[in-house]
Image (cartoon, rainbow, N blue to C red; front, top):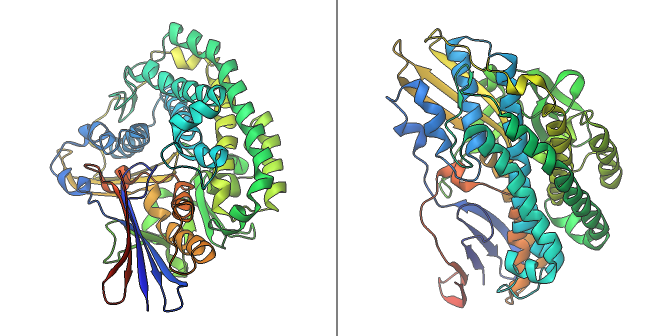
Length: 474
């Protein structure tokens, strides 16, 4: 008798989703699906708005990563104005993006995933959260909170607000960093670095205990996509697009965001509001690829900073070359935070970040623009078409979480097939399925624009639509 297990919503992610696990007559998992049950309307209701408002509007897609949309939108505006922004403008944008990567990765690692690592997959769900982590390891929890605060404070120092700063605009940024802000960043860098070093050492010690999770939490061949800079250095703001396969071979390189429609397709399925992007030359669904921290550290040749380059080599040694397990997303986030802190340390000494020449002024010189930037969760595309007055005619947003959609579905199926057998569904098993999704740190607010909250509702249903078991999690 076939059955269906429904996890609705998935917990400790940003936004709301549902997982359905389908069991066959023998009680074995036959399939699994990751449903995104929210609807996004941003692309449609932006139509008719002035292009100059788009950075502020699209930043409202999400309160977790507004900086990512702010920068991608501003870069799209640069294209429509056909301007080259001043060096100070680019460096300041880079500084804010590094702060965004730091705070977002800290949130994912310390607040959302560390409870699983440190408290146990089968621990009481009532305490398997950041509050339980504070009780179990107050120093680590406090350090994680402070590290996230460091990134958020840099965003506020630059843009006057931690969330939705009206700062990056077409042509550059509104104003530079103050000398007081510069001093604050200098003073807080050592503490942030110490917190990161502690977390890195802890996670590497824990990796030996997670050999099973490394093998089954989304370990499969796929392509990896992201931005790289000159000579293949790790990149988060500029550069060009590169694809690598699971063997480390470069599949495509030197690609421009302007041509994304030539190599990226977007499929839809009736059971999810989230699109399914794929690599066009391989078709759907064979063109599965992953983006985000795991992809970025896989496709680059080096991180470009001394300590992060050393960690990248160890990362690759532990992974056996290309890291194909989605569990390594957690490890990659720590490597990226380290690189971000080192780059912040360099930028804070650059005289351009206090220069007042931060913006190039221009009007509407092109009727179409495509901007790309690396959000914490992966490559983010903004594509605008405007009329002669700069009013938006059409918008397409390709969000990082959506680009991981095929990989998240495959991860859920792999975990479910390994852990779920028969009619008994222990809570810890469900948590492992959810943890496979948390490895990607999906931001469903970005990919669909969330509204409201839902409790966790799990049902075990047979082929006659009878509820065999039911669990509610408030």
